[in-house]
Length: 96
Image (cartoon, rainbow, N blue to C red; front, side):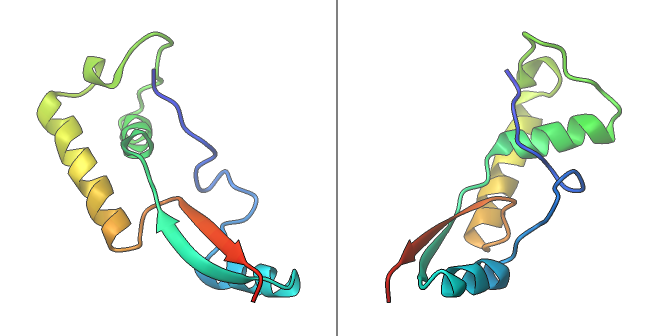
């Protein structure tokens, strides 16, 4: 199964670390940690869309891509997370 959340440009608003920090501050909190946790399915969905392919229910990524292509997308996802450039993140907030 290929899943995914709302992707740009379909979001209503794309938050940044700075905007989350501002919101946290307004709520009396601080950002204690940011964990970039993008998953490969986001790149897979993006590539399907780029190729004009509409995913079919019941099909898996391997039905569209080779093992090498999937492994390459996984490495790229891991690199983006390590560079704090992944397309999703978890924000841990705390009371100052």
